[in-house]
Length: 378
Length: 258
Ligand code: SF4
Ligand code: SF4
Image (cartoon, rainbow over all chains, first blue to last red):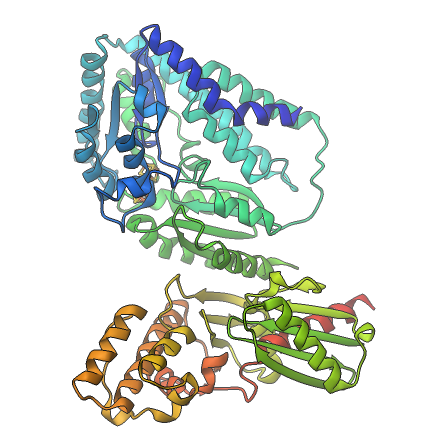
């Protein structure tokens, strides 16, 4: 039964591709997004389908390097490469792309991407604790709403937004419930399973169905007896976004005998405790508040990420932490210093890995991961 | 009780056999087949100790070739093995710098030789034996000759960390008539700087040991001592600490199971 659920999540991409194609033919609009900062609620409220475009494949990187510098984060190169080679059907179907000025690499890449598709860039402030930065962000969320209305030729009412807020809040809760299953020891889900389920949400054309599937999975796990009885080191993964296609560190760690029990990445726990307040007067302000609180390393300072990791280490009873930085991602790479300090102060091994989407460093990654696991072996 | 520990590195394969109260060691070039090198090491160890294959109870294997060797009872990382091996020889060591053929690492160890933290060089060859080997060839020397040929008094600083650029840098330096001894001292300094930076980032606790094939080179030891500002101990069997650690870990597992 659990396998059936996993199958469903794993095939989400293909299934939804066909559905989105159909929906497009029936006149529905699609909006491509790259990052958790994009207020998906507005896209839903506009009656369009939000699809995650985060580049998680090595294939289009060579083509991207014809335009972009080589020593750039593989995520940016892959995202742009898919667009430039028109090999991502979701990009192809998108009527509008929404980007944010998170890191410098993305910010400047979006300028170039404008030549390929209409791209709306949200100017993200880099500090999230002042009045002025908050006002700027509220303005940016309003701008996105206007752009969506213009580009998709709709009007978005407050009512529409509140309804979408409800849906996304539920989706977050459902994903969080799934992740929280792994507080149990041994964890009922593998890291690869968590990733597959969480990742499927970026393509889902029907949020209701996704929420039902996630809730179904959680019930199913509660009913079955856990057959993963082997004692193994419990590892927390943090750092840059990881998706299906770039899961090599998760795969290697599990092959080497670890349980990846929790992920504090964008597709993981990073945003799951953030719910949009539903009791305010202005839904735009409520959205701005939630999104501004995301503990991404592009924020400076970024204390909430450390707090989140600290709590997760305790809640998931973690034995070691792996912090994965994609090559040339300065913000996560530098923040690794603080993360390392925190993890070590809790008496746990901390492994910082810098990698890209290629397989060229598998052996050297293996040695490091194995040595870290040997450190927690009793 | 008889156990064997083997360390199959990119350049050399090393082995230790321990039987009650007795031990022997052996080393051969790894060559193109880590598997055959591992087998050859076992044969040599058995011959040296006068023991039979079926008397050996456990074989632990470490090093980059460890996965290729199918007769292992267990594979262990170099990091854990070096820590264990060095702790046996020098219990007071808290930091191990190991420079091998294709990587360099710094290991922080606890009182019983347990690994507390470690750092390893990235994908690039700077700060490894491979770097020195390429440079020795460019200088028309064997890598084993570098240590005695250096002349720190005439130090010619090498500024490039990249193997390819450093190679053209020394060729240029030779062409300008700079003394070989000074260039070699510069190469040692370059390796020392790179590895010391990695060690400082992790935190250096005394005392410090230097192991691996490159530790035979007194020039690199000198450069490292200058860079990190403390005395460094090079174990007499500096190439064997990984194999020794593997053998000791095998020994301890057996004893625990008794
Ligand atoms: S890491 Fe930051 S910038 Fe990258 S996708 Fe996540 S929230 Fe966006
Ligand atoms: S991984 Fe880092 S560099 Fe790459 S897009 Fe995300 S924040 Fe930017």
